[in-house]
Image (cartoon, rainbow, N blue to C red):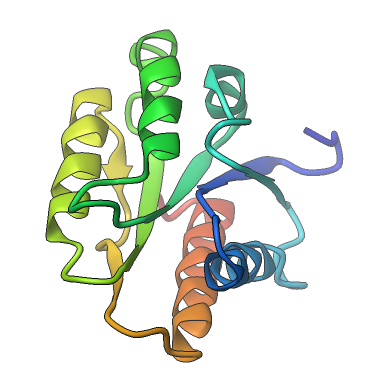
Length: 158
């Protein structure tokens, strides 16, 4: 973390397609709003992120695709590697989630919520489920989610 920043938002986003990369980039853009002067944003793919990244952050935004009614295998791998090293040290970590769901996304949401409940992370916004066929407004919704999370953390609301 750069010393000029006081807070860090970690975005862990699975982005296997052009559209999901747009969502990941929109999340970064939201967390990098010019009015966020004390916030630093780190974006990592789930297979590149790990416990050290979680320990260094003040909030986390998770992004995943819906795969067979579940989170992506990459995000599950991130949780598998990070769960025990962070469980006692990051209780209460503010978190948010977006899901790119071709169907309804509820199984994916339940799976992620089950793990974050075990970690005792704190949801600061309801999960955003982007259902059905791709819509350009999905990127705007993710940008807003990320921006709101970042502003909430920077201002000390969460």
